[in-house]
Amino acid sequence: MRYNFRQAILYYAVLYKGDWEKIAKAIDRKEEYQILETNHSFVTIGEPSYPKCFLDLECPPWILFFEGKLERLNEPKVAIIGARNCSQAGINNTKRIVQKLKNRYVIVSGLAKGIDAAAHWSSLDQKTIGIIGCGLDIIYPKENHSLYEWMKRKHLVISEYPPGVPPYARNFPWRNRLIAAACESVIVVEAGMKSGTMLTVNECLSLGREVYCLPQPFNELKFVGCNYLISSGANILYDEQGLSVFDLSSKKNKKYRIKQLTDKEERGNINER
Image 1: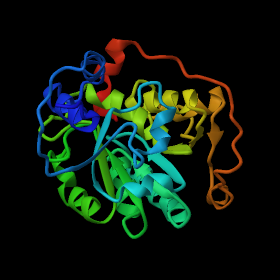
Image 2: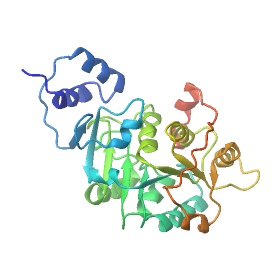
Image 3: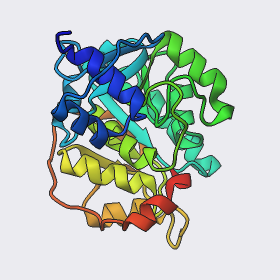
């Protein structure tokens, strides 16, 4: 049988549960594969419809499973991210930000609870993209069930993990690189110092994406990550006027980087984002 790259990657992805390195080794060795059937649409790297934004990554996904309109990834996009265990003020600010931007940009987030969910809900009347860290057939968190279903029908949900892969904690820091690559700029609403949100910011900086943060009150410790990012050089977003002149075409390309978290910290902070 002639080697079919698309079918081989699908098989490797299912066999190795989306593990990027194992899939890479299987491709390099041209391991044997079987023809599989899947109910989910998918695209593999190298195909014409593969989203070009992910080619900016050092490790672009080999395969993307998706439900909805993949072409949304070709439009101007802003990621809005933040803490799962956010404040009500964070929810309200997310809604205000989306209200100002959704007519001009596709809203990208991670379909988690908290800030992510608020960003998606607020943009359902326009365009939004959810990037998840498990199979498309798994709803995580459960409370977002109706949001998932709506987005799969009218918007876009994507994952590099095949159906059946649970939301393992290790998947989410890896997933965050896709959120960073998918957008031209990211807005951080609330973030702890040791959180997945900060990992996403580092990915954005390595890719040359602009980072905007909402400042937090003096001595606010729970979401001090935003103030730390601002002090490190991130753009400050402090009023709605700033959103009115928000322009993805005028990148400042600031050169700074936040302190890297250790592997233990990355594993321990997955519940924060």
